[in-house]
Length: 137
Image 1 (cartoon, rainbow, N blue to C red):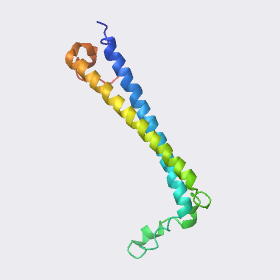
Image 2: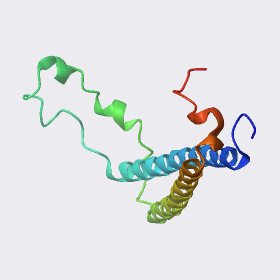
Image 3: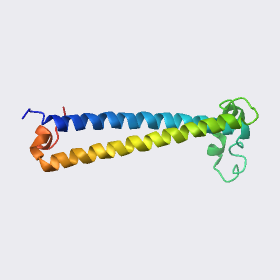
Image 4: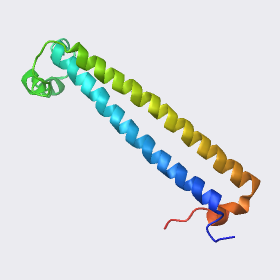
């Protein structure tokens, strides 16, 4: 037996590491697509100003700290008629990313289950992984 455990366990660990990284990447892309959807909707719908409806309910220092509408509006894309086709395209892309994310999550769960089963069947196959408490390297 090699000091790092058997090859199957190491392979499963590497699979899990790659799948966790892929899950993080697809999550990042989904956040970007949803942000684009939010910006497209906000550009067309223009959110209401902050603080106008609650100015007298807030302490003065809080009311004075509210950003001016001009500052906030500069964050939005130029006003344009709602581009329904663009929103549909972004939503379809998010649906595809969500489906892919589910597949990656399922594959990660299967790899985790396989690793757990392998270690449960043969605890020594983990090498030094199960030898004692984790140590900081």
